[in-house]
Amino acid sequence: MEKIKTPKIKICGITKESEAEYLNEFFVDYAGFVFYEKSKRNVSLKKAEKIFGYLDQYIKKVAVTVSPDIEMIEMLNDSDFDIIQIHKEVAPKVLEKAKKPVWRAVNISGASDIQSMTAVFDEKSRGQDKDDREKGITGILIDAADFGSGKSFDWIGAKETLNLDRRWRGMDFILAGGLNPGNVAEGIRIFEPDIVDVSSGVEGEAGKDREKIKQFVYKVQRVDYRD
Image 1 (spheres, rainbow, N blue to C red):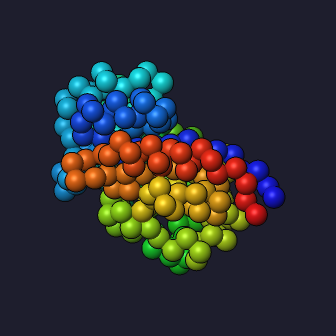
Image 2 (tube, one colour; image 1 turned 135 degrees about the vertical axis):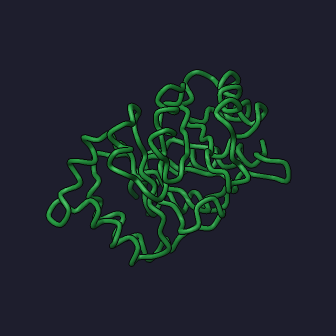
């Protein structure tokens, strides 16, 4: 059996001070704050910064955006966020303005989307791999087609391409999309990500659930071997 590196953990969609305290309690590595008005987890910068005061200093703060404009990037540049996560459109001018590390989110539903996605990082066809790294992209986040839905993509269909054709080597690989305490161990064994990202999978009726976060962290920390 082959030993697997334990990935770091990001809990996304933080909206309350009490949720920050759950992250502290279970030594989570990243806290994600959503800046997208269509999301039920949307927060203002003022609210996010208030929650920052309840987070332990070692927890890195991730601003989750959707097709951000330069104004939003400049606002985040002046904030205490550590990382900017971008879904959908990633305009070159936006990357040029970003003064913080960027995680580029790619939303997929199956193997065909994975193959299209890898073309973005194909030096021969686009010449973007090196350029993206120079522009501050430090991580690639793989998510389901409908991000924030709690649904996963076709893991089996995507397995070979993601594991064998990582043209973004040298960047962090963040696995998202429908993770929960019941399936995260399988996701780790299949993809061996650097970071696992969960939101709805650790929620109850009133936001993030302490017991579900506890179980999620427990499962992640105990995935030691792949057959």
